[in-house]
Length: 379
Image (cartoon, rainbow, N blue to C red; front, side, top):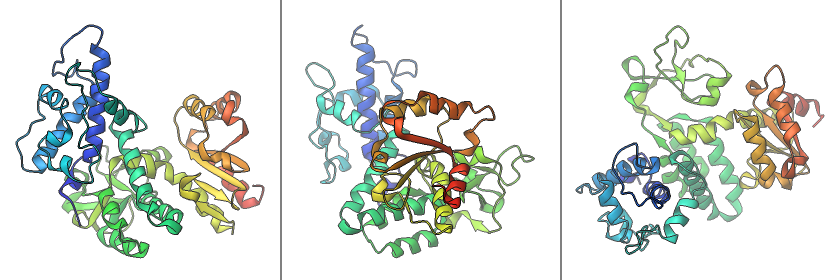
C-alpha cells in the first residue's frame, strides 16, 4: 500500500533531522554575538535552508496551510512538541518524536533531544542523512525475518545495485520472489518516477549498457549520443551506449538519487568482484552477515571492501580510524576502482605509505588485479 508521503523529496524523519542539524548549527553561529536569525541564504545555515521547504511539503501533502515558509515560525514551533505542529504524521503512532522539543522555550538553546537527532544520522547534510535512513530501513526490515535476515539483506541490496533502473514488472516480480511481504512497501519507496526532462523523444528511456542505470539527454550529442549516465561512478569508467530495448517512461522506475550515489555507484565494483569469483567456482558471498564486508571468500577466510574515494588521503584517514567489521576476516583486502589507479602510482602509494592503526593489516589492490588473483587462485 502506497503512502502520500512516499512522493516527498525526503521522508518526514529526514526533514526533522535536517531541521535539528540546522538549528544546532545556527545556534553555534549566533550564540557568541547574540545576533538574530535572518531568512536569507547568506545568514541561514544550509541545513535549515533545505529543511524549510521539506517541512512545507508535509503541510501541502496533507492539504493544510503551510506553516513552515518562515524560519521564524519554525523556530517558534520548535519550542513546542512535534505533536502540536498540526502535521498528522507527527501524531501517528510510528513517529517516535511526538513529545520531542527541539529548542528550550525559556533559554532558546537547542535541547539534548535536538542534539541527539542531529547526531544519530551518521553525517551532516541531506544526502548522508538519507543514506543512513535507507540503510536503517533495510536493517530494521530484515530483523523481523530472523533466520532469513542476512539472506534478505543481501537480496535487497543486490537487486537495487543490479537494477538502478527497472520496469514495474521487474520490481513486482522480484518482490514476489523475495517471499517477504513486509518488504514490498519499503522496496517500492526506494524507487521514483522518471523526470520528464530525463527522457528522450516520445518519452523513451535509455538504459546504460554498463550499469543498467538511466542515460539522460545531454547537450553534447557528439560525446553522449545516447545520453549521460546518472550514476557518477559509471561515468568515471567511460561513455557507454544504451541497450537495444524499447523502454517507455510510464513503465519505468528509477532509484532515488542518494541510493544511486551511495549504493549503486560503489556497488558496480562489488558486483564485478562477486560475479568474477562465482564464475570460477569460488565460495563467494555478497554483503555477508548483513554487510560485514562487500564480498567474502570461503567464509571468514577473505573479506573484501571495494572503495571508490577520489581522495586517497581521505580514504586512508578513515581506514586508519576504523575498518569496521572487515576486522572479522583473516585476510582483509581493500579493492580500489581501476580508474583511480593513476599511472604514477600516487594513489596506491598514498594508501600504503600512510596506513597505520586499524588499517595496518589491510592489503590494497585494484579491482582488476584482485579479480585476476581470485581467478588464478592466488587469493
